[in-house]
Image: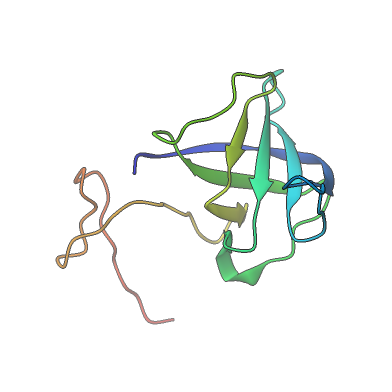
Length: 117
């Protein structure tokens, strides 16, 4: 997987229908606007990981992470399957990637440093 992210404000959360019978409820569509005229729709599934199990609501600043190698429909606004959703916080930063046993990400652009509080 090639993880990419998009950050912005959640403008709308609505049910997202799947299947032939348009079943809804477990899937949501988060519309995120970065404030510069760019909008992305994230499909949030039961398997989407929410950092710190935060509840995200309309108006929250978030970052959604998705697999840039996954096929997507050619529509506007773009629609990505959210793998990880993070509510923005001044107390931490979130990096989604594969990390080695030495705690370096595969691209060696980040490392995990553990601190006790």
